[in-house]
Length: 186
Image (cartoon, rainbow, N blue to C red; front, side, top):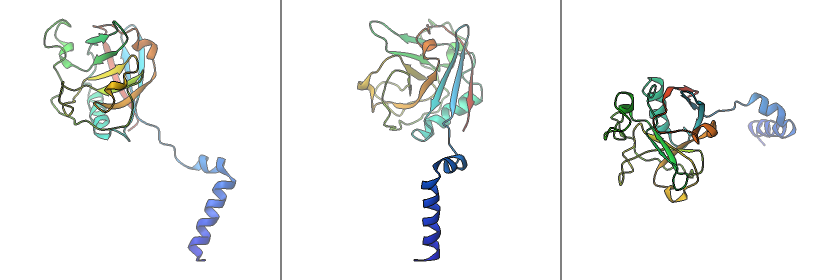
C-alpha cells in the first residue's frame, strides 16, 4: 500500500469516526434566493435551482439585480375553477393599465431556452413562462404554481420554489404591485 493510499484511508476513517467535525469544516452551499416585496401584503421568498437551471437563474437574478422587476404588477391570477398559477414579469405593467391588451407580452428582450430540471409543477413551484408552442421563448416572465399540475412537467423550466410567503402568493390579485425584488447568494 502506498503512502498516498494510507493517507486517504486515514482521512476517510476520520470522517466516519467524527462526522460532526467533517460537517463543521465542510462548506455548505445554499441556493440563491429571490425575495419579492408585495405592497400591502408582505414578502415572498423563492429558492432558485442554479444547479438545475443555470441559464434561467442567471438571467432572472441579473434582471432582479438591475431593478427590472421593481414596481411591476401581478398581471394574471388563475384561481377559478381551481387554483392554478400567478404570473409576473412584464415590464409593461409599470406604465400601462393592467387591462391594456399588450400586458403579458413584454419582456427584457432576451430569449432563454428551456432547461430540463427534473422538478415538478407542485404547489409553490416557480417556472419560466414561454410563448405557446415555443419552449425556448422564455424571458422575464415567471409563474408561481397555486396547486400541482403534473401535465406541465417537462414543458417548462421549473427554476425555483417558494420557501416563505406561500400564504401571500395565495392572496395575490391582478394589479398587486411588487415594490422590489432582491437577490441573495450567487
